[in-house]
Length: 491
Image (cartoon, rainbow, N blue to C red; front, side, top):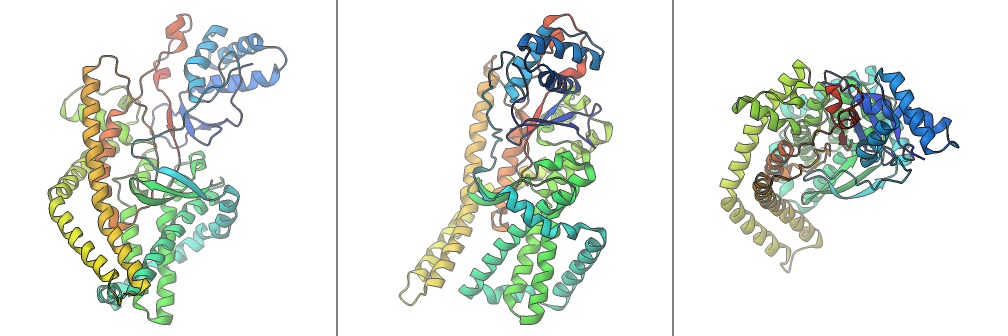
């Protein structure tokens, strides 16, 4: 008997969206959120109601009653064959429902271009729920104002009264100091993730698990806050800003300990945390700044609009259906984002590539020198470990830039082949990984971001046919062609 797949839940309207017709959300059994036009969402609700009421009446009865229910709810006439089409051609391939004969669909998880790979859970959903509850009170307005005030005072005191630059020069010459700074930076990144989870719980929805994976070549932390899409615009933006807010709290703690101990290592850790905050607020890669812009305008994936905006702005072609589906002010914001970010990314990528020989030569010489120091007879184990970390920080950005160039060339080859192939099938656009990367990987990340932008502009979903347009009996609504968008909320 046709039914919703086990664990799939209709969520409702995407609040604060930037679309003229607000889309509806369905959370699939594996946690992924799927955006549907109103017609398909009504079909999901009708199937859920009728499969529960007619559990012992067979598939034909469920299909017929679902068609009647759908006709009543939408004011359009649907027959059982239309429901069969909606299930078999649209909803079952997304994993939302079974096929019309009751068979289970084979569903592949979203695999975004240059997304987070080799993910492993560090904290379960239950552990994340418990720990986020310990910190969610920090989002109470009074606590929020006090903490932000404390952060500003700490920042002004450090940069006005102390000298982080001199502290860095001292710490970099001490293997123990370098290792402590690395550990504190790691702790700051982990606390950053807890900020996203706590903000999600404060909004009234449960955060998912926390874990780590590989983003390109670098380990990255993430928190599953897909449930934040159940919140309104303010709740989603609070979740986006939760990470840098907790970085600010981490800075307050470092300054308080510094006042007690006077250790220059803590000043360097404050500087590193500030650099992490700045990096996360960049709206280029899928950092927190990118998601702040996306949630502000109510569009989960900005990269998919790069192609349409460039065609309209530079090729003077009429706006396609994807742009027409957006409200006026989100169109304006996304256009400014594309026309500002894309040239900046191209410039940064060109700068990295033009200086690649010089960077590679300097990095290799420094790595050889560090390796020689680490293997010297009088070298300690701690000095060897520190040298190894420094070598890793030097080489990984170069590896990331080379890999980005390799994937960019592969993308160009695929685009050429697709242009020549009349039956080439477009890839589905997918949204959101929000990885955490150390500042030392920023150059490599900026190169990757240009590749992400190109990939997002070419990975458009094919517009499907509706049941009415195929069967020819139900009146057709052009809004039915606003197709689904599959995305995950990994911050």
